Length: 505
Image (cartoon, rainbow, N blue to C red; front, top):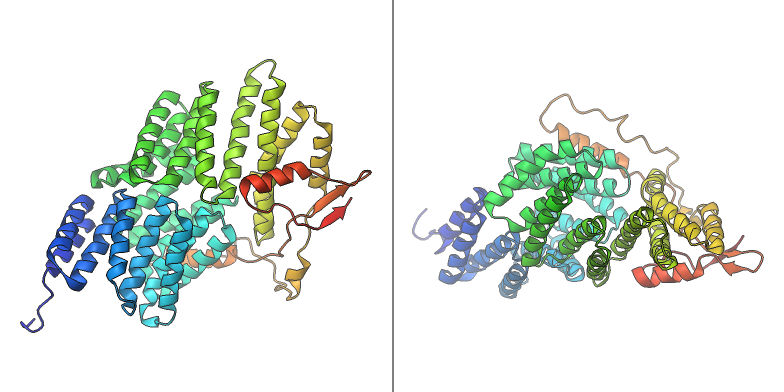
């Protein structure tokens, strides 16, 4: 390089910080980037500010990260498309950690608009789409998650193969959460293989942690231990407080199967990590687990306070399905208390009923938003049906005959085809079983990617769309079945669970 072509002053600091990050020394990388912010100017300074913000976010200082990202965005001109779009994507991740999903979505939509007219920056579409997927994931918009993750996998194959593990992991989460658990675990294992092939140590550790979570949720605790230990060792050595907090939460859940005191200690360490970093949604998740431990120790009032705090965190961010899930879990915990005493009071039974029924209605309504008949059936069987059974049980224990009758009527009414959505008939080809027709390529290299892409397309095959269920007018008096509970669910969770049209039965 000649003197005329000399690198901008301070550029070596950016390389030095990047090298520290690649070694897993995130705190040292932050120190280097902060030094560069103070000692450089122009584009180098802005890049250092963006990198420092990213390091803060990884270390759990999400509020500090957001401040730094905003400062950087104020200095990046609108025609610097690549730098501005990438900064907006990173900024959105900090906002998601803080629970500000609307602002995160707005930042991502701005980035997506910037990139739309610049095909030379197509690789940036991958992280943008990944972050949009994360927002949809937080909002439990499972159809949107699958659509975005499948699109991201296609884009990554063409422009950023080293990132293919991320959309595979998003597909894993979406299918797992909608009841297709073995398929979800399969995608997660493919994601881990893709990251290992790419040599991405950070992503390997994150995926090990995510995979451990999925294993614990299907009671495969022995399978969870090895990836959990490996990832926790990495995160603690790297000083990544937020991810260490996630690991402590999973370790607490594993411990909960055998030792409540150890589980509570791990959960409280996890809670401290999340509170320090401002990770509001993760705080709520740990509060729910702490409530479980409190209920099992018959500290019911403490457990209910924790559940109320978690509910408020979700409600204040418009996460209605999360609120319904908290209420369902509250009902499950109340059931355990009721079953442990000889004569539960009418007040306790009524509380359990009034928590369980609106939650069951809202959770049952989710299946009508899923595009695939198999997904709807599995959501009903594995998620909605247990919630509805609990609602039936508490209605029965309360001696509430009219409620039992209304629940029976609504369950027998069935599903209504969305006629408006069938004006353009779907392909007559039936969706394939997701694994049967797929064979991995003979060569080892890239096999996880190719298999994952094929599975994504098959698993995302659309079925007939269905409409939300109508309100039922029940003979002989024509009252609307579950009217009070439907109103309570829509008010409490901020989402429609029934159509306005009325069907007489």
